[in-house]
Length: 295
Length: 295
Image (cartoon, rainbow over all chains, first blue to last red; front, side):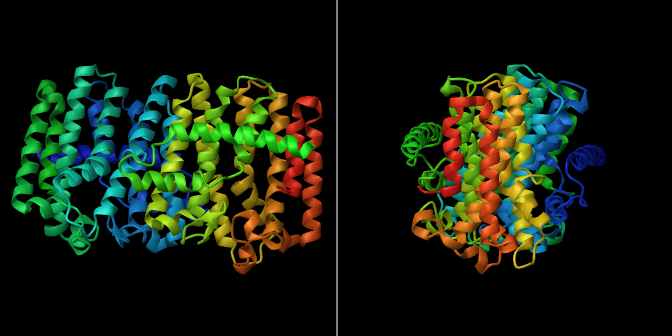
C-alpha cells in the first residue's frame, strides 16, 4: 500500500518537474536542432527525479504553494543531469548506458555531449535566476548552487573519484568522494525545499541531516547494486565499478557491512522526520525505497 | 605613444583582474590540489584579458569606482576561459597550445580539463553572485550571463562551428557562428560595464553596437592571423582552421576582402565612441589594436 502511494506521488511530482523542464528548454526543432536534442536526450531519459522529489516533498512540509518550488526542483535536476552527461563522457567513465538508453555521447558524439552538459549546467543557473521567487531568495539559491557545484564540492568529489580509481582507498577518501559527489547535491535539494518553504532554522538543520544520511545511504546502495543489480532494471551499466576498481563501500567494507551501514542510516534518517508526523510520510516511504530500490 | 599608453593601461587592468581572480579561487595547494591547479592553468596562462578590459574601460566611461567592476570583469574572463578549456579538448578542437603554453588537457589530462572547464563556468556565476553590488544588479548580470552562455548563445555558436567543419559554409552560417561564439561575450563584456556604470539607455545601446562591431572585427582578424600569424606570437596553434577547413572569413571572402571588412568595422566602432570624447581614448586605441594586433 505504502509502495503504491509513494509510486503515485513520485509519478505526479516527476510529471510536474518534466513539464517545468520541457517548457523552460528550447524545443527540439529550434535552430540549431542538434544541441537542443542532445540537451534533452539524457534529461528526458526517464530519470526517477529523486532530487527534485526531495526538494518538493521537503518544501511541502512547510508550504502548499507547489508552483513556487517547481523551478527550484527543476534546477536541481538540471545540475544533476549535467554531472551525469559529463561523467559518462569517454574522458571520465566512458559509460554506454544511462537511464535505460544509450548515453548522450554515444548518440550525439562526445563533442555535442560535452556542450550539452555545459548547457545543462548553465540552465540550472538560468532557471533559478528567472523563476518567480523574491530576488533575495533567488540569489541565495544561486550562490549555494554555485558553491556546492564548484571544485570545493561536486567537482572535488568527482576529481578524487578519478584520482582514486585503481588504488586502495582509505575510508576517509571514500567518505570524501561520496559526500562531495553525491551527498552535497542531495543535501542541497532538501535545503532548497526548506529555504523556499521558509522553514525555521531548527527544521532546516534537521532536514539537512536527513538529506545527509539519505544521500550517503543512497550511494552505498548504489555501490551494492553495481555488484548485485542488473543493467535492465537500473538502466545503466553494472559491474563497472569493480572493473575499473572504483572506490566503493563494498570494496572497503564488504557487501554485508555496507548494507548494514545503509540500513542504519535510513533508520536514523527516518527518526529525524518524527517531529513532522504524518506530513513526512512520503519522505519516510522514500527513505525505505532508497534502501530497497524495489521499483 | 598611443601604443605605449594602451599597453600600460592594458597591463594595469590585467593586473587588477588577475589579483581579483587569484583571491577568489582556491589556492593551488588546497585539497584536492590537482583540480585547483588545472583550473588555474589556462586562466593564468597570461591571456590579454581583452574582455574584462572592455568591461572595465566601458564602465569607466560612466564611473570611477573601479572596485565595483573588478569582479564583474573577472566573471567575464572566467566564462571566456571555460570556453577555451572545453573547446581545446580532444572532442572539439584538440588543440595543443593556448596562451603560449600546453593546453590544460595536455598537462592535466582530458578528464581534469573537462572538470576544470566545468569549475570555471560555475565560478563565473559564483563570482557574480557574491560580489559587492546590489542584489538586483547581481541577479540581472547572472541572468544575462546564463542567457548568453547557453545553447541559444555561445553553445549554439560552438555547435554550429563543429557542424560546419569540413563543409562549404554560407556567409549566413559564418555570421551565426561568429556572432554567437565570439560576438555575444564581447558585447556582454561591454554591456556589463554599462550596467554597473549605470549608463543611460542611449549610451548602453551605443556601446553594445561598439561591442558588436569590435567583436566581429576581432574574429575576422583572428581568422586572418590563423593563416598569416605565427604560433609563437599568438601563443596558440596556427593553420589549424584550414587544416580542418573551419568556417572562417578568409575561407568565404578571401583574405583581402576580410581585412577590408575588419577595417570598416573598426572605423564604425570608433565613430560610435565620438560622444564620449577623450574619455573613450583607450577604447579607440584598443579598436586599432584589435586590427593590428601589434603587441
